[in-house]
Length: 111
Image (tube, rainbow, N blue to C red; front, side, top):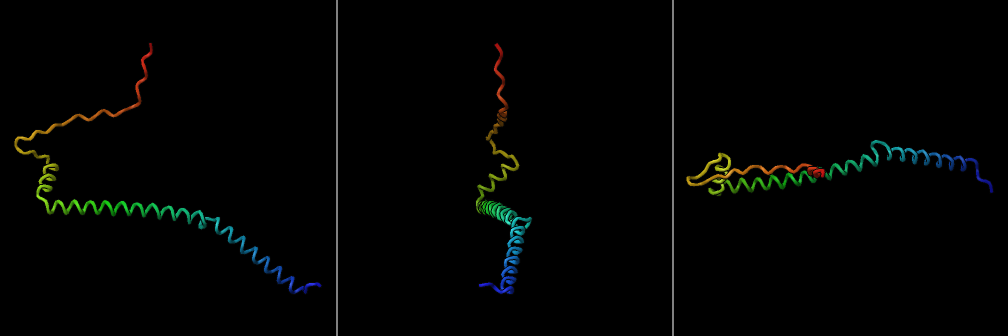
């Protein structure tokens, strides 16, 4: 049984067409807009989501602090004294020297 030449031509055209689409797809997925770029975008999205979550937490903490300052006179007084460095009569402030920063260990003395 021989196949008709039209069927063989059609079959060859399908194979060539599928091969071209497959090669184009492989180049498209490996190119600058392909899978590596997609993975980079997902990584960037995760980082931005983490930054947004941290910023939201910081905003909530600041809102709570503002609420405490608005409602508590002792919080207000403490903040004013801290910013203006004020003392009440009879209070003493101790200013301690900063601890020296640790550097590389000194070499052992030669005998």
